[in-house]
Each structure stands twice: as C-alpha cells, then as structure tokens.
Image (cartoon, rainbow, N blue to C red; front, top):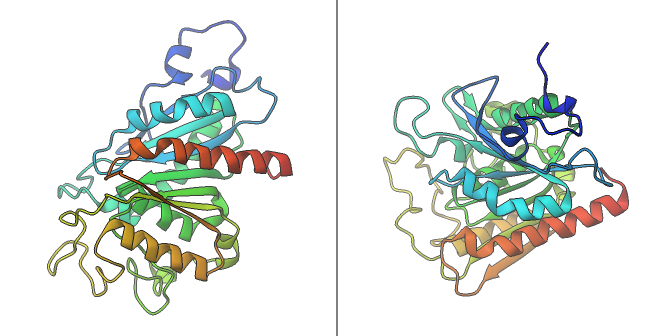
Length: 288
C-alpha cells in the first residue's frame, strides 16, 4: 500500500523534506508532459483554520520555484497551500512558448490540466480544495483572466498581472479577442453571474510600456482581427479588460504601481495583500 502525506504522523518522515515546505517538482499524473511544485505549510493539517489553495501561474520565463518562494511567507502565516504549475515550451514539438496563455493549444486544454493538478494534490495530501485563489503575471496574467472567465465557480479570487493581450467579454468577436465561440471551443457557457461574484485584482506597473513583445502582426501565430484593439501598452490593455469586467458586474481592484516596469517581484506585496484581505473576508463569512 502506498503512503501519502495524508497519512503523516507527528513524527518526522524523511519524505517530508520533499513533500512539505518547499516541495520538489512533481509530474502531472494525468499528463506527465506537465509538472508542478508547491509550498505546503508543515502545520497545514493542525492549524485552527482549514487550509486554502492559491495557484500561481508562471510567465514566459517559467520561473515556478521563484513564484512558489515569493508566496511562501504569505502561505505560512495564512495556512495556504501554493501550487505552481509548469507548462513547458513546445509541448507539441513546435517551439510554441505561448500556448497555455490562450488556454487551448491543439488538443491540449490547459484549464483542464490545472483542474487535474488540483484533484491530484487533493488525493495525495487529503485536501478538499474545490476552488482556489488564482494569480498570474504576464503570460500567467493571460491564463488567469481567461481561466476565470471560463471557470468562475472554481476561483475565490483572481489577481491578473500585466497580461500582454486580453480577452474581453465581447460576444461579437471570437476567442481569444472575444467570447462569441466559447461554447464551441470549450463546451462551456459563460456564467456572468458567477463571474460577478469573483473578487478580481488587476495590477500593472505604470512604467510597463514596452510594446515589442505584445504587438500582434498579421501572420503571427495568434493574430486575428482585433488583436491590438484593447490598447498599445499593457496598462492600456489591462484598463480595457477592467472596463469589460466591470460592465459585466465584476468588482475590480485596479492597481497601477508607480515606477514599476514589467516586474512581478515589485508587485508581490500588493498581490499577497489582496489575497490576504479576501481570505480574511472569506473565512469570516464561513464561505470555505
């Protein structure tokens, strides 16, 4: 019989150095092309409050352990588990580094990959996570707002950091610019009422104005009509996304950080502060 961390006794086990605290990197059970690391407080099963889950999605640089480590102090003091998935470059052998950002790549559904990872850690650790806080910056910001649009009932709060391109709640344009064909592509009907219940932070530096990486051009892999219509810079595009979400009834905390360029590290205190505030409200209301 295999033993998991759900069976951990108060005595220290050698495996704890890999499964608790700053964990090692695990493969995805359902699709080993993907992997993940975690931060799991050693007192997670003994704390006064039930643990919560925060998922931090990497940008194009895929520095998952840096994301994990940046959230570990917050997670320790708030009894949260941090899950950082790794979506590698070129999963389909074509050197595509952006597929996960748009949720769908060939036959891969990155939203379903993430949900399978959550179920995997539930089984491994004996957790009961049904929803989670979701953060992503840059490429992870792409993923975070699109996942939240598709699966609002699985997200108790979302922090969307400086995405290069945005999907607006626009039924007149196809995915990824709009949402007209979401049912056809994802077999999902957008639940605007559920989306409106998700607290959302949108955060970007006011000096994050380089456009070389985010300007779509005809012939590009993700080019489509309207690709650049949300604005030229990341702050402009994120503000357009804010207005789209707010028009749908979503409460958006819009943070423009003075003097900050495209650096999530300079935004982390505001990001963890947002999650801490929402988590306090969530626990006080008994919505866990």
